[in-house]
Amino acid sequence: MEHNSILLEFSMFPTDVGESKSEYVSAVVKCVRESGYDYQLTPMATIVEFPSMSEALSLVKECYEILEAKQCNRIYSVLKFDIRKNSKDRMSSKIKSIEDKIGEVNK
Image (cartoon, rainbow, N blue to C red; front, side, top):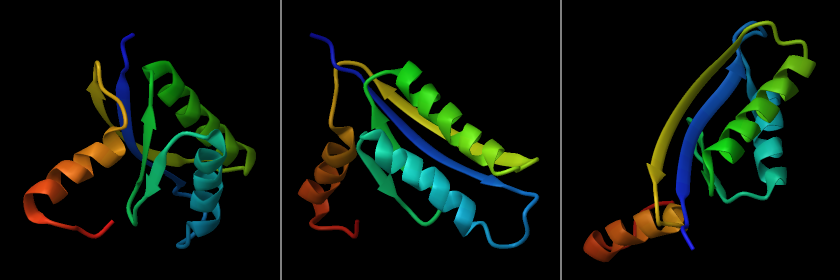
């Protein structure tokens, strides 16, 4: 059976709501958390691992709709994909590969 790994690093927030964005970013991160996919929150983006591109794009759409429902009129998004066929659990295995070479790193 083929296993795919779609790593998505993304950020999404409104640009028309003032200086602080945490209320809106929190709503997006909550959606990611409740999706059940493995994810990692970083200070600048969220990384999520999916088995298919359609699932990745579906979650992005769901996050957008959450911000749209909050009356955001302008939403900025950055999406980066790392797609690898016949692979899985890369969120942890990529870090382990580095740690095997140099020792423990901050996570």
